[in-house]
Length: 293
Image (cartoon, rainbow, N blue to C red; front, side, top):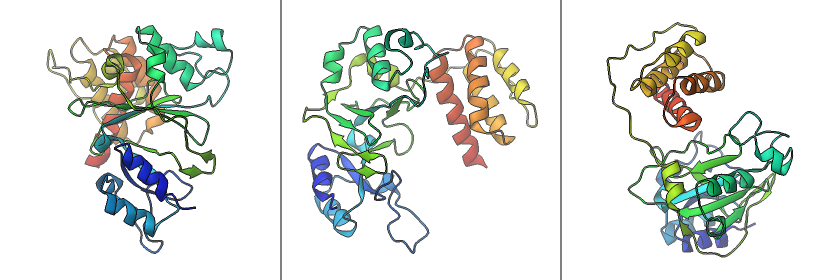
């Protein structure tokens, strides 16, 4: 199947695109006998000649849409992975309204309406149905505002925007995976991101320390690091969380094992930004420590 027409449609919408492995979500391997994949953040392009060259060489390559150079924010709403998935979260009440299966769009609509947003307006943007029957909502994002890519609701409403060196990417319409095809739901123009969504997703400035902070040491237990965060004083909480997460990473503790306890400790200490900000800080700490290693 030749996907060049879909790649050119993406370009016509203003997107920067790059080839992705056929049937997959990972950047293209380029040549089977070479031990490397495409550096997608550097290879994403809006140039007509390069796009034609890409899909002439690899006509069945899926279409990666790079959000940062495209000035996009994409809200990725998934189907539920299990019944009562929102139990124990701030969205648990949605199960009373929708039953055991609450999908990402239900959560996204709730977030929109809870801050006074107009769901009809938010929904009336370009949308792509994903291979797993989720939905990508596309919005134009202001170039000079850095965004966090922390999930709105972990595992069910994710964000792809301009965070990090290259930002995030999504598969574009026309792509095909083992779960199904990515299909444009409409031909609507892309709406600018509403103000409440910008405020929700923008990166928050770092908190200045009110007093000296002692970094947690190497070799401590996870419970000790949790205590460091729980006992952090006003003005030190974000920094305490960052260093506790870095110490955990340095000690070889898996990210999945620290997300919940450190997030809960941050909330118990009264940290600003709530669980979403805590998760973003923890993930950032693991990236930083990983580079140091």
